[in-house]
Each structure stands twice: as structure tokens, then as C-alpha cells.
Amino acid sequence: MPTKLQNKVWNKLREIPKGKVTTYKLLAKAIDSKAIRAVATAVGKNPFAPKVPCHRVVLSSGRIGNYTHILGVDRKIELLKDEGIDIKDSKVVNFKETLYYF
Image (cartoon, rainbow, N blue to C red; front, side, top):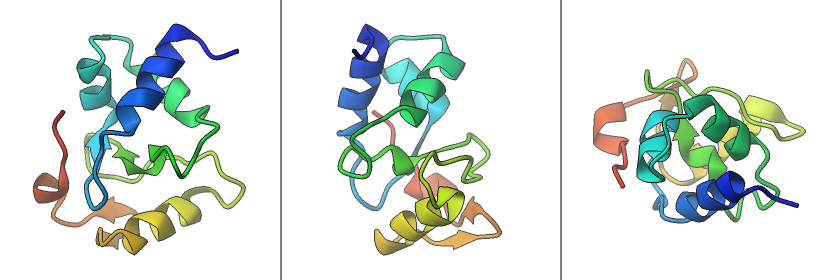
């Protein structure tokens, strides 16, 4: 049974448009939470990926971060590239222009 926080996170993930990324910190702020690590954990437990696009959440530095898929980070990079996001050395190219604010 999902927690209230998980449901809030998963619903907010649906708002991130294709071709954009956001950060765990911005996602936490968007659901009015200061618990960034708990938000990140909820992102990682998303059972609806990639339909609910948790792969669009990256670190505040623009680095890709983790992905809890059997293929891991390689799958996250593949999904992002398929959406037109350029990745180089595990980091989003043009991060500031690609960043989505809720």
C-alpha cells in the first residue's frame, strides 16, 4: 500500500513534460516537503515507470543519479535520450535549459 507521500510524488511526476528534467529538490518543493531524501526514495519506488516518468528526475548538479530498473542508469539514460535530452558523461547537457520548474 503506497504512503501519502509516495502518492503525492508519483502524481507530481506526471507533470514533468517529455524532453524536460527536474530535480529531487524541486520535486520535494513542489509537493511542499522538506524531506528530499524521502521524496527520492518515493521516486525510486515508483511501480509505474516509465509511464509515470521518474526517469526525468536528476540530481541538482545535472548528473543522472540512480535508476531502480533492472538495467539501472543505462536504461534511464536511454529513456532520456529517446525524449531528446542530451547526456554526456552521465550529466544532462544544457541542464539549465532542460530544467522543469513546477
